[in-house]
Length: 381
Length: 55
Image (cartoon, rainbow over all chains, first blue to last red; front, side, top):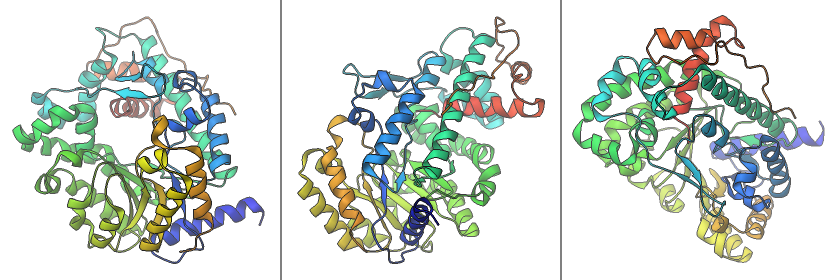
């Protein structure tokens, strides 16, 4: 077995042990670092985000420098070339060329839920797609340009995933992303403001649409995603949560939980884990996850106190622990002291990562990330 | 590493797209000549869902 295979085997055991609460020889680490890495490499965002060769080079240098065991982002979180092909999308590089703004946007009206329910694909084609293009008419040439850009993104993604596994012997998050229906409505179709109002004004129509969306977009392929080879992935399936941030516990139970439960129950059936990326907070929903066996999921926390969550969820592996405030403004010693405190308290069932998606220049200092990773490499748990 | 996908071809690039369903959808899908015939509608479906869920 060569050194590379040894490293892949080591990382496989690290993640498997962490998810299943077994002792580890050291703490596994996960990079939750997004546009910050381009700034760290000395680029303005406009210089790099339209060029897959530059993104590729940044990723290589980033992986070599920081040596995380796994990576949430391979540089494609903001595929601006695709947005350019569709006429700009809802994304804009900020004035100082070091951050990206995403506008809250509306792609469907409140009175269109029934049309979405009748046939989601027909609705996406006839209503949503023209609104994304944002012009009175499109040509086949426009379709060709978009298809080319999607082809390039797929090609880059395949290449970078292969390189991550075969060259760097490091992990990606998952094979597939199960976008829960309320998340699609909240983040994309209706936007944050309008979907928050919909919960109060037309919840039953939303529910009908979401049942169909889940089956159309997730349900049909969920078993296959869990069954596929997930070598080099922390989990076969990832679920990202943000919409729950505007929901009460009762609303969460109605609008997010039925679908998330289906994903988690499928994970239990296949004895494979789910990676839940939880923006905002999770604490008030913790009781929903309390009965699942160890090994069902890892929850990556953003704003929660990870030690408080552990008290509520002793059965769930947790990822995170390092706040951006500290990584961006503290000293290496302060960061390592914090990492040690978290690791000492959590013990098994823990992956060390940044709590927030590290995006802005002041979200982290290079020396702090390196110091924390060095600590993790030498800390047994 | 070759990150380019250069083999995308499409019919009648000047023609206006019809956003009717299923007629307009099928017409565009059938013009995706870079794909085998039985994969074209699935690609177009994935494309429009993906575009709606990109951020």
